[in-house]
Length: 408
Image (cartoon, rainbow, N blue to C red):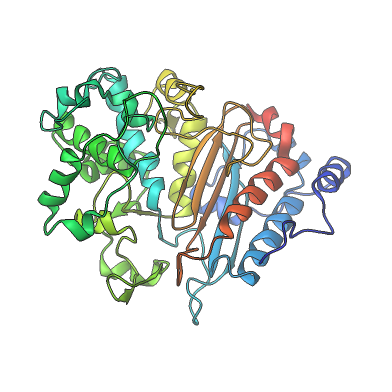
């Protein structure tokens, strides 16, 4: 078992004090050059941030994660709307001899699919007036029928308060993609809509169908055309081709499929749905997700291309019903006990993925924190990723803290 503090020589308070007193020179941001060659607008502020300390601290955390078998490899990126401040990686793509991860490694995002593809699509369609948050789901999906289902709204699905159960083993019950989707539509509610939060993959799958019905495009095509391509997220995709296998981080030695998964979705239900689903199935790189985080921090416009409106971003980032949960629309909010750590602002929003991924975007501090790993390699029983996520977020905020706000 890993130690609860993997930086015994650098407690958080010491790190913060050391930063404030330090005079550092920003190292060459070669990683940033690969994403956006322009430096941050306020170079003076960037020089005040001891990026070397930030990088060194993150490196220690990831190296310790590899030593503790939290994952075979990982990459962490911290930045602002203007670009990357620090990027570090550790380990290798597999426990056997393999390349080290980098900014173009493709990772199975697992439930980050829910925000990178699904929530981005829903945000656009709601903002365009094509989907109404408080409309019944049955308005878009009449076959979503059964007791109390007429009371389930789009907002309920986005906040995981629909009354649907968390999950069912579609991959064991269905013999085709169509049958798997029919089972989702037919799944009965197990509680009254709007009375409790149950994180539900089934609800996300239904929202993907809503996107298809409203837009006339399946979710993968919609997200590629309206989100990923405009943002230059060239590697973000479902069902990556075999030509990309050398860049893809392997996930689990899957007892159901009887093989070591690489390039096919880890989530069994997403596999049963053909590899394309709103709840899982997306693959992406650190560099692509940096662009997504930057556009959210920039009010929806990046490099002259607008994909979201500032008002829609803000609306989707608000807690919807604090009595039930800390859920915004699609996004999770900092709680003090989740992967956001302890120091992100109340404006922050983020999400995690079962394979070992997480992203947090904090407009209040003009900061994003990205962690990508394949912690399920070779088994999903590796559970130390939760501690690493918190430590990475806390380290990022301890080092850059309020200084990042100067770049707003």
